[in-house]
Each structure stands twice: as C-alpha cells, then as structure tokens.
Image (cartoon, rainbow, N blue to C red; front, side, top):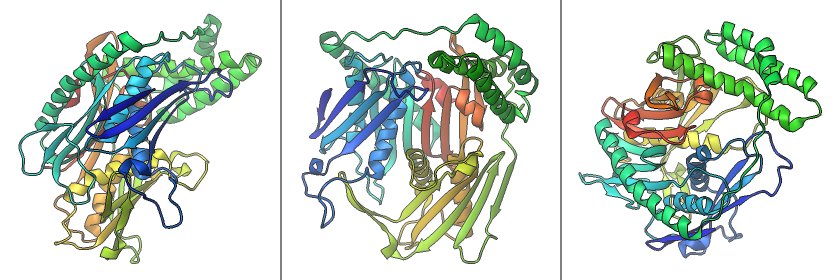
Length: 499
C-alpha cells in the first residue's frame, strides 16, 4: 500500500493477490477500482436524504479503466491467482487525482510481492486556450466550457508508451508527436523515483510454477485443427473458421483431459498462441492480413443520413466492413442539461454522447441492461472526439444528446460511432464546425527485432485480439480531436505512434 500526495491531492493505492487459485475464471483475473469519496472535496455532498457514497460515478469508472489499461499488459497473463488494485481518493487539491492514482497503483504493485514488469509513470500534458506553451501536470478541471486546447494523459516505461487518453481542439499531428517525446522524458523521472523506493522497501517477487504444453497436445492440434486454419484463416471466412476451430478444440480437449482441468485450460490457450503467431508472421513477412487486405487498406464503407423516422431529430448510419453503427440525435432546451455534482467538480453538460453494445452486436446471447465499463469508456471517447466541433451555446443554445447503437461488430465500433454521430448531428441541422471521423490503427511487431513492425490501417476483430496495439485516433481535416491507446505488449516507441 502507498499514500501519494501532490499539491493538496492525496490518494491511497493498495495491491492484493489471492492466496489460492480457487474460483479461477480461466484467464488472468485483474480487477481495478477507483473509489471517490465525498469528503475528498471537503464538502458534504450527496442528495437530501442520503449523504453516503453510492455507485461509482462516470468519472470514477473512466479512471478505473485508465489504471487497468496501463497496468494490465505488464502482468504475466498465465497467473491464475486473482489480483485486485484499489485506489481511494482521500483529498482533492490542485493535482489531478486520476494521474496520482495511476502512479500510486504502480508504486504499490512495484513494491509488493506480486510479479509485474513495472514500474510505470503517468503524466498529463496540457495546453491552455490561446497559449503556445505546453505545461506538464497542470490540473485541468472538467468544466463544460473548455479552457484548453490539449488534455493529454500519457503512461509508459523504459522510453516507451503503453496508454494514452487525449482530447484536443484540432491540434496538428506534429505537435501531438512532440508531446509524446516530452511525456516519455518526464516519465523516466517517475520511474527512477519508484526504482529507488524499491531498493529501500521492495519485497521479493513471488514465483509461480509454469505448466509446459506437452508434445502430444501440439501433435493433436497439428492433426485436428491446424489444417482447417491454414485453409481459410487468411480469407473473408477468417472470423468464422477461428470460431469453429475454437469450439472443436475445446470439445477434443474436454474428452482427452477430462480429469485435468488446469492442464486443459493451458491446452485451450495453445490455439490462441498459434493464431497469434500466424497473424504476426503473415503480416510481418508477407504484408497479408486476416481478411486478405493490404496493410493500409480500409474496409468497404457505407453511410446514410436520416430516413428512419420523422419523430427523430437526426440519425446517421455508418458501416465499415462488418462494423455497423446507428447514431440517433435528440435535441432539447437548456433545461435538459445534465447536472454533475462530483467530487472534483459541480457543473452542467450541454452535449452528451452515449454508446450501447448489445449482445447481438457480436452475434452472441447475453445479459441486457445496465452500462458496462467498456460501454462507458467508448461513449466518452466519442464524446471527446466530437466536443471540439460542437457549436457554442450563443450560436446553438440547445442541449444535445447523441446515442450510438452498435448493431454489428468486427472491430472499432467506438470509431464508427464517431463517424455515425457526425452524420446524425449534420442530419439534425446542428451547425458543427467541421465533420469528425475516427479510425483505429493496429500493430504487428517482432519481439526479437524492435525495428521490424507493420502498421495496420482499420483493424478488425482478430487484429485487435491478437495484435500488439489498438491506437484509436479521431479528428477533422484540420487536426486531431481525440486519441486512445490500448496495447498488449510492454510498451511502444513514440516514433511508431507518430508514424
């Protein structure tokens, strides 16, 4: 555990690993919680009849996701014990508690006995409206009327970046790229500080025995599964054949290793190890992708404005390959603003974007109702991308809500939501400054040679799942409005992100 303090802001982070593997879910079980406390604001908040904290706020959920996305790639995914990281905000001063929370989580895990490839550092890079100077860790309150041109959160280690969350008012790519370099140099100072702490206070890391895959299992896979994958993996039936192979492989293993559940789980993972290697090899050596596209080729596009019902104020449909999104616009008066009374700020929101991902979107059955963390994160990413083009209230005084329904998914529904929402806003006559579009860029890299890599334009499901990064970028013809980076590897060099 650690208490971290900066400019009046105080956070406490704890890291715990379960004693046993009982109840293991068959994958690495990491949970991250970011807990906001009303007392942190020095006020008695809450409703008239309840002064106790309730469910997590939207901002708390987003902060939990930021911490999770930063620390998750650095764990050994074969660990079967559950790991839980909890960050509690004790006081809010001038420093951003979310950034302190990421650094505190890193310190807590780094000093603990939990195996982890950290430490990491997190910095905020900001640029106030009308100013040229870039500032580091300059706290930006989350107000509706923006006072800044750039709010960029960068996390990383060893000269690489492993998580980005950014909103910008149409900044040039070169300027954002320079901010990546600045962030990396600042992060190295935070790393040095944590490594020094570890020399004084760090515990010896636990060692978990690894089960090795047996030769008989590999031979069985090569006989029963590999031929069907080699025939259709790099065709437009890639997604279908991968799913069929997974079902068949599970059935074969259940019969062969009925009594040995732990080994059966490991053997199931061998399919994913094979697919990961196959997608990497073909992209790096031949420039061939899962669906046969070239590395810089975008899937077939379709778009439509309006025409659904006269009841709706505006609507937009956007398809990119098998990723389909329907966005609906609703307009209201100033009284329809969203009132936010949070730990960090009390404000009103005039523009809202919400995102839904029902089970049928991925061709599955599942629970309907409630908003998951992923849906919350994707909704806010699209909202950030669109805010810079929303007209001021003196030009367009209405409250604006856009809802994006993901109707079919094969990668990057959040970016398709940005495109569909732009169409819906224009269809409804909202005088946006200029259209916004979003796309996701993937990466296949060679772990033995850092200079050998391939960038993939417009990634789909398998390239997201087995690739090394999901780099979502939204913007206009004038510049970038939002960035989000998730990765599967330890870190990515700024030069690759610039490219």
